[in-house]
Image 1: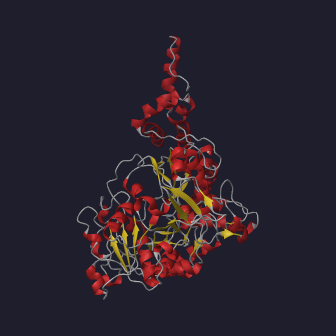
Image 2 (image 1 turned 90 degrees about the vertical axis):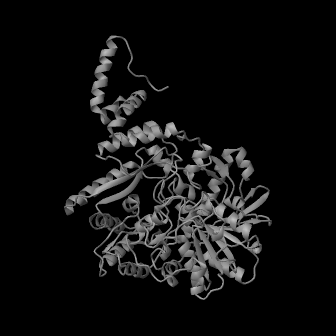
Image 3 (image 1 turned 45 degrees about the vertical axis):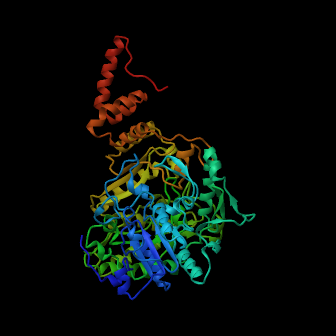
Length: 630
C-alpha cells in the first residue's frame, strides 16, 4: 500500500516543530492517543481533534507516547491552555494485546508496521498518571473505547477480577464516554469561559466524582465494595446501566467507589443528521501522518476506501458493546454527505474504483427508526430485534438501496461492496404495517447478493442452538438456513459462484460442549468448513460478560452455565475444526463419552462403523465400549 506524503501543515501537529510551522507557541488542547495518528473519520483521536479545531481551538496530538523512558514525549508540547485528552485508542487495550486464551498477540493493527509493544496495557491509566505527575493542576479528560466501557465497576477478564470505574484508577478529572463530539466541544467552551473542571458536573455523557446528592429520580447502584462481596449485586447493577444507556432520555446513575460518589451523566439524544454530517465533513486528509513515512498501518488499510454511513445499533447482541458506546438509536448521514465522501475516496491516488464497504456498525440499519418516535423515546428494550422484531420498527431498506445505486452511478466507481455485518433477520423480518416493504426488502437482499459481494458474503448467525442464541439475543438458526437458500437462489439466477461465510462463537454463556458438537454436525450437513470463528472473550459492559463473571443473567436472575477453564473452552472450540484429521480421534472419543453416537455417525461415518463393529465384538466378551454422562 502506498499513499502520498502530504504537507504536515494539513494535519494536526504532533511535534513542537509542527506547531511552530503553524505559528503556534501553545496548544489549547493536547490529545495523547494509544493509536498511530491517522487523519481519517474512522479514528477517534482524529475526529475529536478535527471537531475541536472546527470549533476554533488549537489542537495537537501525541500518538503512542513512549512511557518507558524519561517521559520526554509527555513534556515535548508543554502545557495546553485548557486540558489534556487521553484515549487508549480505537480498541480496549487488553483486547488489542491478548487473545481469548490470554496469550500475548504479536502485532497491533493500529500501529505503523503492525508493530507490537507501542502502547502499555491500560494506556488510559498509564498515560493519565504520567500527565498528572508532570502537570498536577491541569485537567485531564479520558475517552475512547477503553474509558467508555469501563466507566462503571466492571469485570476485567485479563485480571480475572472486578475493577472499579476507571475514573477511580486513573486519576483523571472526567470521563467523556460514547461518541464524544458534542461533549468535548461543550467542555472546551465551558473551560474557555472560565469554569473550573470541578464545577462541571452536569455535562451529558461524562463521568465525574461528585459531592452533590442524587435526585429522587436518579439510580443509585450497589457500591463497588458491595459488588466485591456479592456477584449477584454486580449483575443487578448491569441491568440498570444497560437499560439507561439504551434509552432516548436516560437517567443519571451513581455508584459509591472507595469512599467517593461517581456520577454517570446520561447520554445525549442521538445526533441529528446535520450534526453527524458536520463531523464526517471535516477536512480529513484521509491518510496516516507523514511521520510514519508510508509504513503500513493494518487498521487503516482495511478502511481506507470504505464509507461509514451511520452510527448506533439496535441489535442488542449480548456479547456486543456497540450500543453501550454508540447507543441503540441510529444516527444516519445525509445522502449528500455520503456521496461527497465517496468522491473524496475516488480522488485518492491509490483508488482503483472499488469501495470496500458502504456500511456501519450493522450494514443495513441506515436510516431506520420507529414509525412512532414517541414510542421510541419511552422504550427501554435493549434490542429492537430480539426476542422478535418490534412492531414499531420501520425496516424499509429503500434508503439504503438508493445509496447503493447512487454510489455505483458515480464516475470512477466500478463496484461498491458491503463489508460490514448484514443483519439478514432485519431484512427478512415481515413488516405488517406496509406489505410493499417486504418486497422492497427482498429486492435489497437480491441486490446485495448480486451486486455488492466481493466473492464472499460474511454474516453472523453465531450459533445453531436456540438456547444459546436466545442468550445471545440472536434469531433462530432456522432463519440463517432460509437466508442460505435465498443466497443460493440468487447466485444461480445470476450465474455467480459466491460463498456464504458464517461467523460462530464458542464458549458463550449457556453454551455446552454438546451444543458445539451439534453445531459441528449441523454446519457439516450444510456443507460448511468453518473459518470465521472465535472463542468468547468477556469484554467490559456486555450482558454476556456479566453472566460469565457472576453466573447470573442480569434480567432474569437465572443461573447460567459458562465454560471458563482453558480445558472447557478448548473442548468447545475444537468442534469448529471437526474436519481436521488430527482432531478426529479426540472428537470421536468425546462424542461417545457424551453418549452421542448419532453425531459420530454424522461427523465421522467411517469411525462410527469401526466403533460399532468394535462394540459388537466387545459385547460378546461382556465389555462396555462407552459410558453415559453422569
